[in-house]
Image (cartoon, rainbow, N blue to C red; front, side, top):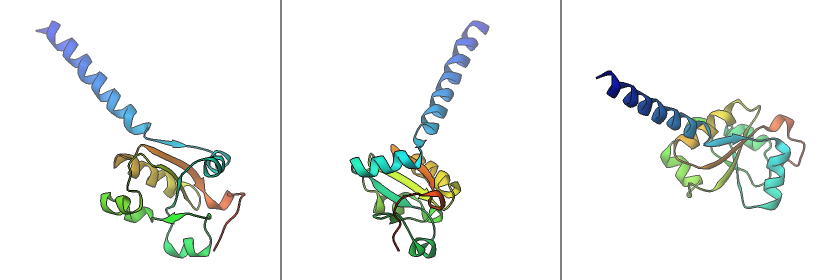
Length: 127
């Protein structure tokens, strides 16, 4: 009996470890310089996850608004129809972008990049 439990327990632990690794690797934290390079060299969706009033006060050119509190399967699909789209996520200081990146990854999006907050963005901003 003990000889069968140990291999079964090892198998269960390996499956749980693999599941945990998959969800933590579903989005990546990158620098603002890396985000700007991606914006300049490839097709990306820039996602602002702040509130409407914050977005109206100034945002990164080309950014699309999707407040973090509204992210669900339906709202995400309306803004990001393809789950393999490259999505660069930001907010004001980096807290909401991390939460949004995780939420999108949990919904099955596979190329999510969190580059933090607009307060330290050294490039162009538009109103």
